[in-house]
Image (cartoon, rainbow, N blue to C red; front, side, top):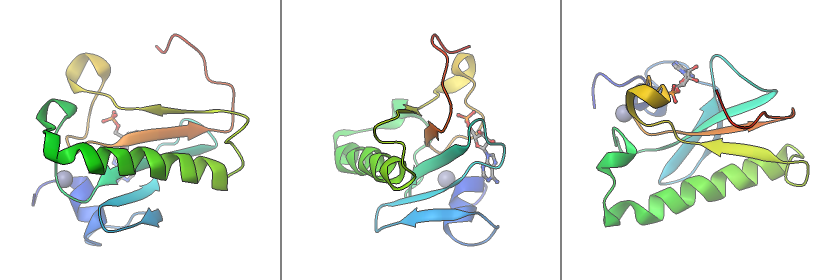
Length: 114
Ligand code: AMP
Ligand code: ZN
């Protein structure tokens, strides 16, 4: 999609701090980090919200979670703990409409979330 900031980062059209890439998934540091480790894991293919997922996306969503776990492990947070979050639409605070899995680690994370 031409007007999507995450599609542009994946395509190298705007800068992003990439930390992981494979055929289906990319991950880059959040520009406004909320924890010492705050990475966004995204599918290369544009999908606006979780509401738009179909059965054909099952594999890519699995890859996103496996990438999150691998990144958490790489940074030493696998045992300490970390959080993975998808925000969907207005009340959850979704601001970028290309699905992204937030990976947060490196501090104690409160629950329930705000
Ligand atoms: P959400 O509120 O779940 O839609 O999260 C969107 C996230 O994208 C926020 O945490 C933003 O800080 C982050 N973000 C927005 N633009 C960029 C960008 N150009 N590079 C990296 N992260 C971004
Ligand atoms: Zn996109």
